[in-house]
Length: 158
Ligand code: ATP
Ligand code: MG
Image (cartoon, rainbow, N blue to C red; front, side, top):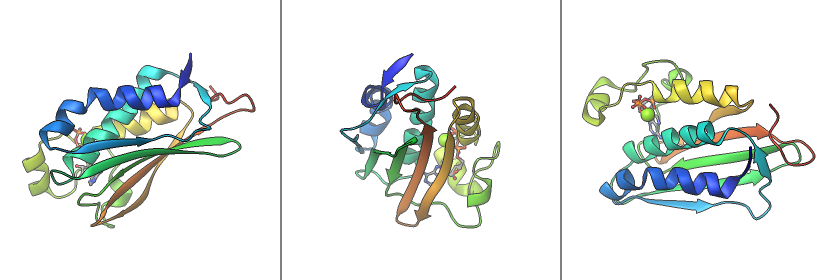
């Protein structure tokens, strides 16, 4: 189906709004004016975004912000999910897309996940013909970058 990127971002944010408001975290959307329509699976793309926003919320301090923005290139659209939280230690970064991998057992126990989120995200992204990378991370926060190919008409392949 043809989908408006801004609509998908909005609907993903709406679905995590309770978790965000519990921690008084603002989720800010800054889509580009020239975002193309995407030919993709909206349910799966929304699931991908929800997982990444949930992580951004879970691994940030209360009252911080999460930002989502897009960049359009000739053949790709990139979606960025940025937080200003604890970041991911360099030595853990190669493993975070692995099943059940979590950084620091103590932190994990306190924040109570299973370590499957990013493994599922990676599978879903690949299913949609896209790519995900940990764009940058430090103790000042983390940016995940999603990339999907677009054709000349502005659709996602596949
Ligand atoms: P769940 O299965 O509920 O998603 P989880 O959030 O622990 O559990 P993943 O989403 O796969 O699992 O993330 C793996 C690990 O990567 C997390 O445990 C956390 O240590 C780290 N991580 C993921 N996203 C972030 C982020 N935005 N900031 C800091 N650390 C993160
Ligand atoms: Mg998670």
